[in-house]
Image 1 (cartoon, rainbow over the protein chains, first blue to last red):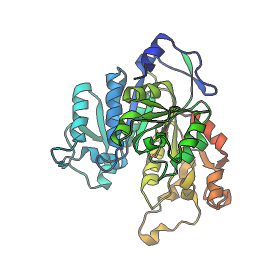
Image 2: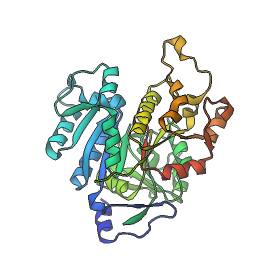
Image 3: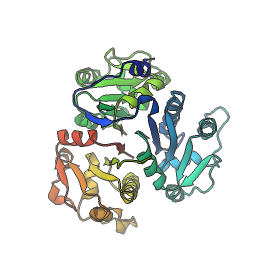
Length: 146
Length: 104
Length: 122
């Protein structure tokens, strides 16, 4: 494992790269993230990658107030999901993440309705795109998983 | 605190079946970081037809590959020019780079 | 705590009708502009087809959502970028597009990307 985080806390670089732009930043340890998930579990790997990434953000001590599920990502909240026992239940993993860290899991209602989803698993909040925009406004980093 | 940042590009599709690599590399600037995840990790394997191109790109871009996705697909060895990282390293890249673009 | 205006870029790399990505992306762009954020759109690769004049999806019972691109300036979205190489590869020029756009080369696109706070792709 590369000790990036430790390295940066001890030796904040003045300028790492050629080019790039200067922006005001909070201290690295206060960095906050938003995650956008646009693909369904099982059908693509994006949602699983998003889960592992989100977990690493939270265990790394960074803030992740909200994960937003849009487009086919809304399927992550489908209460009717029924998986064989030997297969990963990503929906349950999302719920555990929310329980353990208090991260909000938000589903876009319009995208869900388009896809005929109306039964949502516990732990997921059904809302609108405004929550995605607010999350972007209020955090330092957006990472998108397709 | 004012900091200087370069971008992070995340690619998740195979270089053999998709054109995202070409698109990403056309838009990436020297000093940017690129991370291969999911199916894109096969771009980092030794002796493929894209290996030469990846090695050339490392001159300008910092290229990383997500180890768990390689392991899932049966690979442990990567081109020495490409750094294999785990999810903690992935998070570190998103801390150090801004903004972040997903190429799918 | 005050939140600054963020620069939000939506990158369109796929064309309409084959998949729904572009339509769902446009919904985000329009919504974000109502929050007074600085929203830009970048059309690259097959995304340039989204702006082609003369689209008639209705005869397939498809919604012509691309008409909304003509209303972008009404939403305060003025920064609309198109990659010139993507146009050329597809035999198109700016004259084929339904709205005025800023046509950029790859180096200029790279600078636009770097200047953003958040980049959304679908």
